[in-house]
Image (cartoon, rainbow, N blue to C red; front, side, top):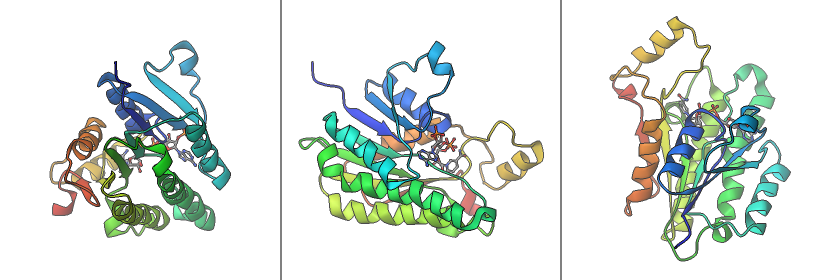
Length: 233
Ligand SMILES: NC(=O)c1ccc[n+]([C@@H]2O[C@H](COP(=O)([O-])OP(=O)(O)OC[C@H]3O[C@@H](n4cnc5c(N)ncnc54)[C@H](OP(=O)(O)O)[C@@H]3O)[C@@H](O)[C@H]2O)c1
């Protein structure tokens, strides 16, 4: 029986990343995820069909350790999904930009540079960067966050040129996907009112977008808007 195709999703111990990991596992992929800390609930209930690699992208050493682990284990990827993210306020100034630069740009940059050795040499490959709607328009309240996500989108286009035709490289730019548990009602109402469709779609729309990019052989160097018509209002 042929080996299962392997997908690596960064920062996927929760929320959107975890949902996508579970969907890939159910669809017959071998799934690797990264996180900084294992979740306590995994002791009682291990993740089904998902292998966890510990990786912290706040230093170059941490990123290189992950690359070494993947190389030493002879992992051959079908897809790499850059999902890990920080959402820090500009109050933290230099520290915020530095932290988000590391996770949104440095980690994708170094992992993508290593892709020649990490991807299956014979098959098709995909790298997908999970960006954000604010990367293209900017944000007065999250300057460092939107700038580092815009940098991620620029990396995506450059790597699309460099890695073609063997590996397709794209981004997805979501607006609201899912609220955090503690988000207050008035914040939720305002956020929902920003898009034409006015819904909290949940993480399945991200999985659908990833699969569209992976399944389509003629799309590279693009950014797929996933925003419920946020640009229409
Ligand atoms: N949720 C939304 O509505 C929404 C909207 C627009 C865009 N997005 C984008 O969609 C993606 C998923 O969103 P989400 O809400 O599911 O994200 P999330 O809950 O914030 O999860 C992101 C993960 O990134 C990991 N991470 C953060 N800093 C890291 C570091 N220095 N090194 C390694 N890992 C690190 C964290 O993992 P550990 O703590 O386990 O290490 C965290 O679980 C993100 O890229 C986000 O920007 C989401």
